[in-house]
Length: 259
Image 1 (cartoon, rainbow, N blue to C red):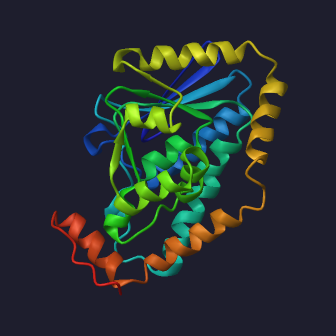
Image 2: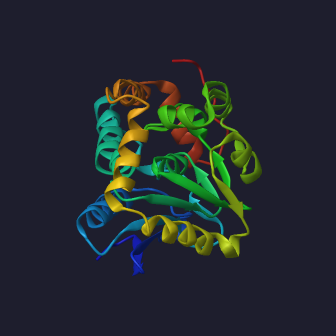
């Protein structure tokens, strides 16, 4: 049914595993399309009460986007890439009436950190690492990361992460409020499912209303997300973005000029 995902439904909980371990589960067009389809399945299948999203293998949740797909895109194409991802996947996960929890096993970088943040909350394995390293490519986060990171950890910490491109470990992510729990890797799925089993005993409409009300704290205008999409696209018109992505694919340090 899915090219890039493994799914299993047990006791009302759908486990969604992004299954590209050879690519550290990086997001490409196929993964985005499959995630959009699985959100539709979660929304429409009455047997699914809640879901968790994780990555295949011990190393990575999602290690970012597939940068090779960025090469040669125009400003408008960059905007479209961000908008389609946000509208078909990330915003829909956040607004889903059924709980979707991130079980972060390893690297959650760039689009992977953004995917984890779009979930209603997150658990991390002890080896998890989080970061928004887009600045190294002459880019900014484009799947809602500039907005959700500020919401979750505060402006100062969010800007430090985005401007340095540095990673933080699971213990720091817990201290900053980016994740709710840190557990040994072998217990990650068990502990995540246990929380969902508790939630699944609650009144489904009340659960849905909690999600809607909590999201309303941040306002429904979507202005910040629109701003991010426009600025993400603007990066594609810069020499620095072309240099950053080329350097990444050529495995060398970029030489940025501010143009």
